[in-house]
Image (cartoon, rainbow over all chains, first blue to last red; front, top):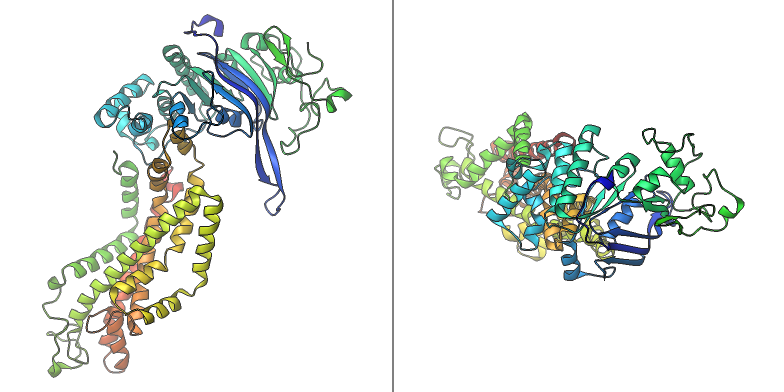
Length: 330
Length: 284
């Protein structure tokens, strides 16, 4: 899929996260004063190549949304560094951060809570132009209308309010807002999982067309493997705050290395290349407040050995360009 | 850049469909007209003393009767509406302004700012408000300005808590994160994204608050530490009325009804606004 489309390729890494950690304090229960920490992102390193798509896949609660927000500095990491276009932006603040943010944007999962109900669509879409003094008033209006037409809405949509649109249309508005400032990186946080399947395909194709047109890189977060495969050049598989496997999309889907990836792929009937027999995982994801020692996945892994409960495997290059964190791979 | 459109239009339509709220609104509108154009409702001077017509029952010449100094009760009730409307609005305006600022600061910044401001709210809530007002007015002179100020300064805590709660939930919404990602500064996020979305419940509480302020003013005037005679206020007309209630019922009944209808009108309107702004109905 991804091989057939020619994309503007400046080469190199656009965004590099290295050893990023993020924990949230949480009360153990509503009545308890005891505070535990939820280790949402636990030492993650990923690169997003310029103009390409890195798909980030994992079950709900594995920390992929948190990682996406850290990537564009909507959340500050507890440790680790974020490099964007070669520049360390981990500790950027104030005006410098504001200016950097023009070049990185986000599309949200929920098309209802992501649009201000008290603003007209053209002001939502053009907020970045207004804030950065790029366009205001009549010019903002005209530019917003052109952009709305580009994402498949009508120019009249600009004068309306978000609640007058359907979920798919609202997501188009969110996309228009994200690309208004011509960013280099867009974090797409489950952009289609709130939509009907028929609408999903339209939105995904719009995202692909826009990527080709604007040369943006996507950090595409999703729990849906089919969507990930359709969109991604590279894929990173996340489990309980850690990256399990990372590699080129086509190869990862053809021949998954990590047992977790293998079990995930076997659960999706439409992926023909997945292993024939289904690997059914037992149990639930352990709580991120108390992740298991050793390999995060050993409590549910069909290949687990005693060593897995003791030693946490590192992400190693198992084949050229392909990384997995498992003692028994490569 | 934008006014208020779509959402407010829907809101107004739902509000008008609510008959009780519409009736409340009409009553308030009526008293507004009375306060704004008293000459349309009476041709008499409310302060004119006429000892020849003391304590007259309602008649053609004095539709609501006269008081112990022969003043026309209709004229006094009509001019008294000014005091009530003014006190209601200014006091609630002060309370809402303070509540908005404190609530926004508290909810948006959280942490220590929030802790300090909310403990201050708790302290203010510990005072029995009415006695606080009584003692403050006893120190200051009982003028209408002081009354408005004191009612306003003791009535903002509810608004502050309300706005804080709204702000806490709004600032976690995705559209606020989106605004931040666009490069919007704190001021823009607060005034463009949080405040407009927090206003509906504030409007409800302000409307209900006007009713409360009018009642408080009437009570203060009734006790003689509110608006001072000869300036008419519904409360101080009642004070005179209580001395003659056995044989001059009109002196108590009409200002009492005026208070009743105004307060009822505000309460009905306030509850109507609450229903019309209900998020489950507006589908926001």
